[in-house]
Image (cartoon, rainbow, N blue to C red; front, side, top):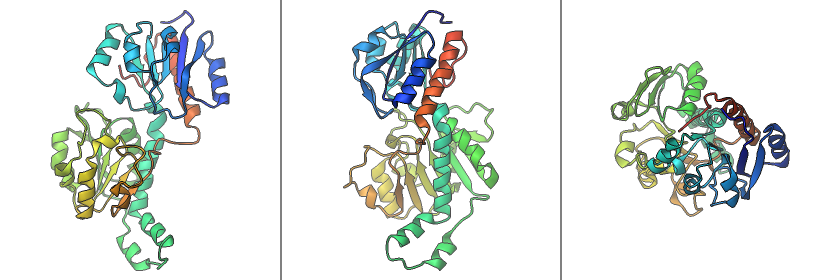
Length: 326
């Protein structure tokens, strides 16, 4: 339980009305801005002298510097992902001094799940094909688009990385009466849908109409979807990647699409980001790309601030923190 006033470091460049509300809402605590603030909440901070006085870090602090500062008791990330902190050295260092790491999964589960659903419906109803025609020949392809439009009803979707986003997507897909299968390293047994291990999912993969990749970035997930695994996807299925770009072997993906091994791919994340204009993925048939916008929404930064403030109250009162990673 924390009763003494805290110094809270922040490196996210919030709009002034949000920053003013943060200052007013932290109560007796002091909010200090990093020497360099980042407009993107994905960008990590360099070493910052202002962090040395902090008890709490809100944003994306430099992980090496955090380990050198035993005063930092709690880190609250402005992202759902935590790749730069996901290593044994960092986790052991925080645990050894009883410090906590939380993320903002509660901010991004809803928009990311809605984004995946939008693309699933868009591709099922052949919206990209109609748009390509509108901005191309305007040939009015009435018969082929109607003939290839699908219903989600009764289809099978495998959700890799069954965390907050996949749980919310499960709720959004419920009206479509789909066969949903989640995948995680260690199923807990209390999930609302069938959840299997990676090895079990490999056996089921050829049955899927939709293969949804929401895996985080790590050494274990790098190129998880390689040529061998992509080859297990059936010709009529669609592959979606909304976690991190490193989890997909993009060369293998391009080759699979060019060979028409499966119907289409939708990518919201790539390696690198931004994806260079000359990258062949932009021109790969049936590859649809959005620029890492799945988590974006008009109230994103307001919700990030609210999520932090709610967790700050819990931290003050010694209550369990929401979205705790460490």
